[in-house]
Image (cartoon, rainbow over all chains, first blue to last red; front, side, top):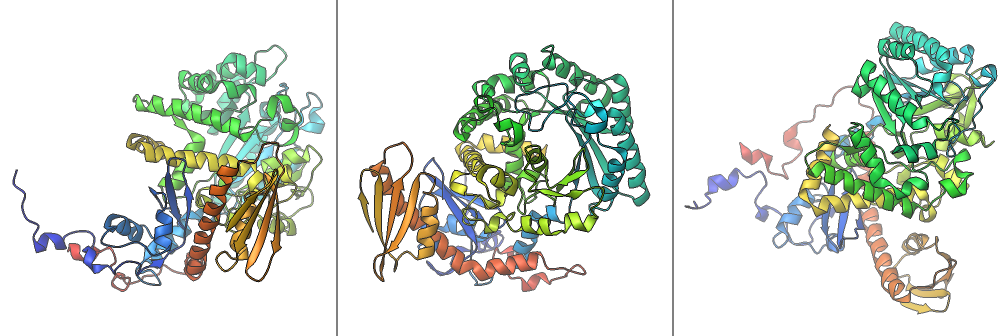
Length: 498
Length: 121
């Protein structure tokens, strides 16, 4: 093989300027970035717009102390310039690009509230020990949402500046109030058509009361079904208690019927991790794979309401959850390495924030927090809450996040009222203690409701926060995986592209 | 910096000329899960930080003797970045959220060419 000498013309065609163009050691300006050590002896640098570099430990110190030499550290130096970690001019030449990227990262704020949750009934025929809300089996009139309240909720939803809203029906068991769902869907469809607003419908259900007529209606209005599946039969039935111990069978048969009539993509399932679940990560993941799902959301129990009343069954250390999560994720990655597509949803949400310039519409990982900005809850009794977790707190008689009542409150009172403003102050992780210096700030979010619920104030205390511990643990782990094997990075990119 | 261990306390003497109060407080904030942390000004140059163990576990002296200086240095570095980039960060955020009435059409040649794209042609 003949190696041709590099000519001047060829050198000029390089994408980057020659290294001699750059100044000598230390003569550069820092741009905003944060860093944290990983457990593999490396450290990750993350800039203001979420771009990252995984480098040897001590690199941040060298950069900040102006010890980098553009000749000796040419590759790193070029990476730092190209990825907006340092600049050769005090104001970076591509400031407009950085600002546009920042705006894109925050573009989830552009259209305001999208998700409108209607707690259509509090009635339920299950008695799950981790259920975050109270459950009642009878008295339709008291525990179903009245039509006046449905109308008012739809009216407020139509006032959202978001051109595409989601109307999600929750319970209790939502299908027990299917007549109310039909009324709400028909009315919301008609109202949205009048003003040209796009609307998606979701029903959250355990599928036990499912009937064919319901699916026909769902097909007509393109309603998505979100169900619960906690894993194999023994685990699901233990977690989700029902009189005949047939919750699993009903869920499986419901999923099949939904797929037959609505199509595979119209039904998804969520897991909830009880203390018992922690011993079965492989079995839970295996169950989802065997049932033909292409993803699983490994999520811990929300520490709200009734869920934390039963300490033995539902309270566990975040360390134990992280161990469970990593085991599950390992199996999922192995499944992908064997040529299959199967995604973990929580990792995918975070990876999209890490590997793409775009935000994710996931309300629990946003700054400013998703409450009110992205989600609002209309409860069965007409009360309005800042988030789903906020209404769970209300079931425990904590009304901190109650914003008003559908009978009396106007749009401005709820969305721009005093309470909304007071929550906003503690919902920006850029200014929260512990978060303001965190390397993972761009990928994470803030959760004032969780802070209030678990730590007694909206700001929270990061060193003892389960939210912080969980997200720090998972995000660090994802970076370590990215750094460990190029094939895993390819899999992760595949997850966020599909 | 001097680190002194007792059965359930750790006492650290820190030179404020090297580490500002802000850096010290941000650093020891992260120890408040396992320790009660008190600050005391010794003189105009030194501050004494006392960490009292509130967990059941014994203090790991070897680990802390290495971790505390490392954390302080890291927070010092973070502080340097924050101070040096404060104006740029404000500029980025202000520009990002500026209310553009119409698409701004900024001439590319004025942006500069730090990556050398112009040489491609």
